[in-house]
Image 1: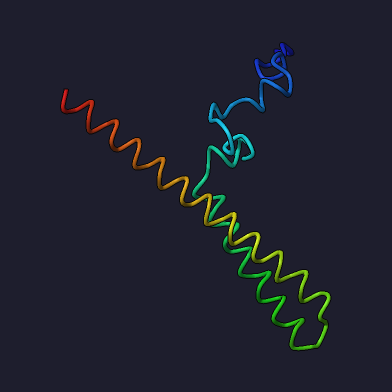
Image 2: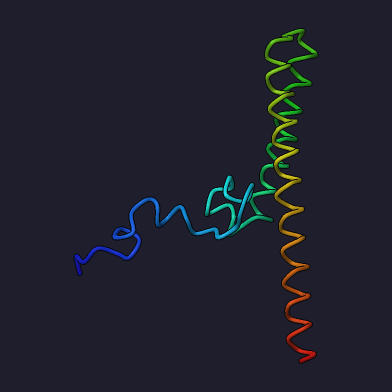
Length: 104
């Protein structure tokens, strides 16, 4: 009952190495990698909220805060759209693989 789990034996490096992707894919956290579409849509929603906060700060002439929130919004929107596009590409690769396996 008190036996350590497999994840505990592998340590942090075993947990982190879940996504077998290469290059830029290794920048994505493992939980987000497993839920790319949800993570991307959440980042896009957060970017919209940060953009709205930036516009409100701009209307009150708080230019420093406005710049902060607008940059944060731009980064979240860019990251979220990248996650969603990666999820879409993954869906297409899976569909092609399933289609070729069915044809064989």
